[in-house]
Image (cartoon, rainbow, N blue to C red; front, side, top):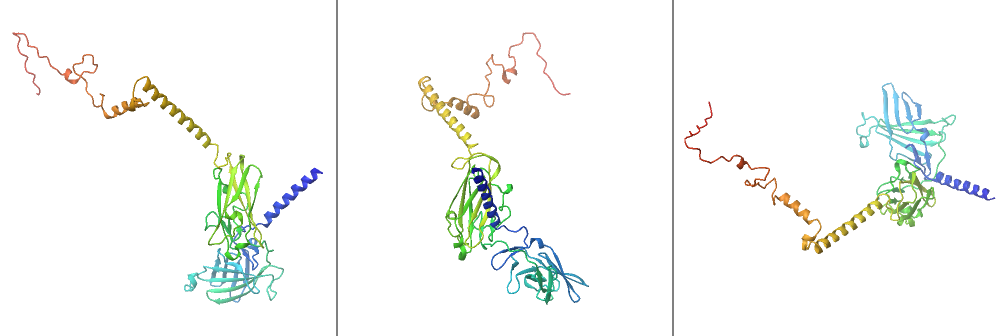
Amino acid sequence: MKHRISAFLVIYTAFLYQTSIIGSVVVPTTNCYALDNSSRIYDFSSWFGHPIEYDGVGTDYAIRFCKDVETRSQPGYVAFGRFDDFNYFVAGSGRYNFVQEFYNGDLQHCEITHDKRGRTAQVNIICGDCPNGRCKGGLACVCDVTLESDCRIIVELAIPCEKPGVRVFEGFTVGFHPRSWEIVYNGMTQIGYEKTHSDYSFDTDQSDVSLYMTAVASFSHLVKKPSIKVFPDTGLAVTLSGLGATGTPPTTLSPTLLDINWRCEKTRDIPYEVQITIPVEGYDPIQFTLTKMCGSMQNKGGSSTKGWALFGIFSCVFFVISILFCCGGFVYKTRVQKQHGIDALPGMTILSACLETVSGVGGGSGSGYLRVDDPNDVFASQASWTRETTTTPPSGSSRTSERKYGT
């Protein structure tokens, strides 16, 4: 019976874990996605670059989904824009589910267009079939093309839309600075924090991390108190603090701070996983993963005990030995050698000798001199070497002829 209960708990825990992963909102791998009017995400990554052609009168049109739009005629190809990566795949209105914008097409004869972006195109997407039933077999097709001007075309496109995903809490961000969103942008967890990545792990010595959360003020009250899960559940002590840990509503003008304090209690070769879940009322929860390496244990203050402990011990020992040496030397010189004042300090004799050597006082090879009359001196002075004999020569001897030089 106990084995059955244990097996049931394991299966139930795994189910909850998988459910939490499925419920998390992760940004798609490509920029080919959009949010509908109910904030549910549609991922069209499988359609990225898919070619769709339309035969017109004298001109053919070609659309590569989420890439570009062009016309093909006898004079050649004319580009009517490329897909813009920044927020130009949005929800539509009326019979159109989504709208794509394409900019920066060919500029010839379109130099006076908006922002000099050249030829542009707008693709209105219908989920399903064209109103005239043009699509057959459920495949993508162009329903109609309208030449708004020589520099802009409107394309009506029907495709079988993907199943809608989770509901995204738009406008919510999480970053390492008050105006950044490295972790969560527009309610979606960014690549690198959706699961464990060794390249994104924090070092052992980093005992705390500060996260800044922002949200649209009118919806900020929907953000609730966050929770954490650690994998494995032992070896890393994690606590949350700050206003973000209490569920204080964040805004764009006043970001809420969420402090993560973690301490390594057990070393591990692979990083620990810390999964943070932020519930949002009426939306799927915000969920992201932070990882921390534990190459050594940390004390309760958060600092590593591997190197600093040894340094502190050696510093204390050196300090105590220095104090004992100074006190013992001072007492010895005062009582035994009868020295007083500054002369009784240990090391003053050596210090004085060094200062005399540097200053040249006390005789030395650098600035002193040798006595000439010292017969025991090994190094005789140059004056004694060159001193001539002054004795009187014997009578009758001729004077030494004067030495001459030269030729």
